[in-house]
Image (cartoon, rainbow, N blue to C red; front, side, top):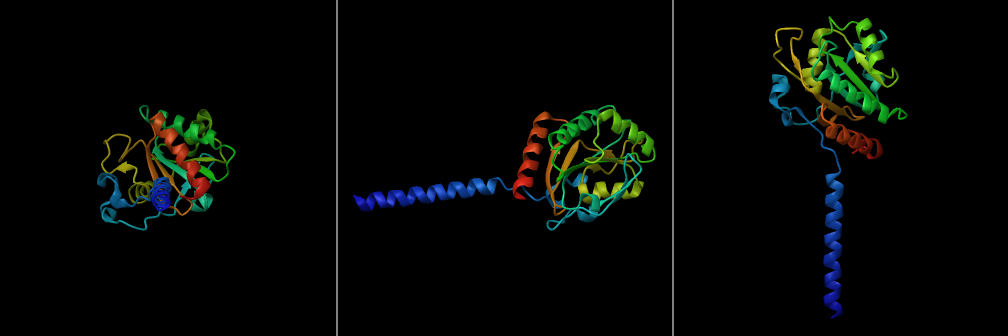
Length: 216
C-alpha cells in the first residue's frame, strides 16, 4: 500500500514538473528569422536564411531634425512600424495604437518606438513634426523618421520585413503592411502584430512586459 502511494506521488510529481516546464517553455517568445516569414515581405537574398537574424544599423532623421541611429536604441526593447503621413486608411489607426503603447510605457525608459516613413521625399522634417505634435508623440520615447529612400527600403526588406516589394505606382514605390515589429535588446525580431487590431495591441503590450521582465 505504501509502495503504491509512493508510485502515485512520483507520477504526480513528474506530471507537475512536466506541466510547469511546458508552461515555462510556452512563455518564451519566438525569435523570427527571414525563412519564418511570408516570402513576399523578405528580400530574395534572405528568404532562405533561417538563423541568427538581427536588424541592421540605421541612420534616420526624426521629427526634430536629429540624426537617429541604432545607438539610440541600444539595449532597448522597441517597436517598429512603417507608415506615411498622407495615408488615410490604416496609418491613422496604426499611429493611434502606437500612441497607446507609448502611453502604456511612458515611465519605462527601456521601451521605445520607431516609425519610418515609406515616402521620405514627401515626409520632410517639418511635415513629421506637425504629424508628431498632432498625434501626441513624446520625443524622448518615439521617433517619427524620414531618411534616404534606398536605406529605408533596405531596412524594410532586409531588416524588419514590413513592406511588399511592388508599390502602387502612386505616392509609394512599395506597399507597407500594418505590421508592428517587436525588437529585443539583442536586435532580434521577437514578435509581429497587426497594428490595426485592438486585441493585437493587448498582446504586444503583454509581450513587451514579458521581454522587459525576463528577456525571453
